Image (cartoon, rainbow, N blue to C red; front, side, top):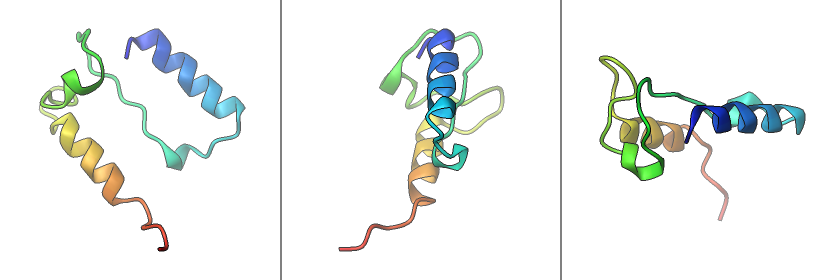
Length: 66
């Protein structure tokens, strides 16, 4: 998402009292893509793919009870 929207959503989450451990905000320098257009992009110079960032984040979440 555009950088100014990242700043806005980060501020909105913080003002709503959302624990910062529940989300991750990342910016990719010099990019104007959005959403899944980033899926196969590195998350920064020499970084891992955005897809791996998402998978790692989801895998770190507790499994819901059935």
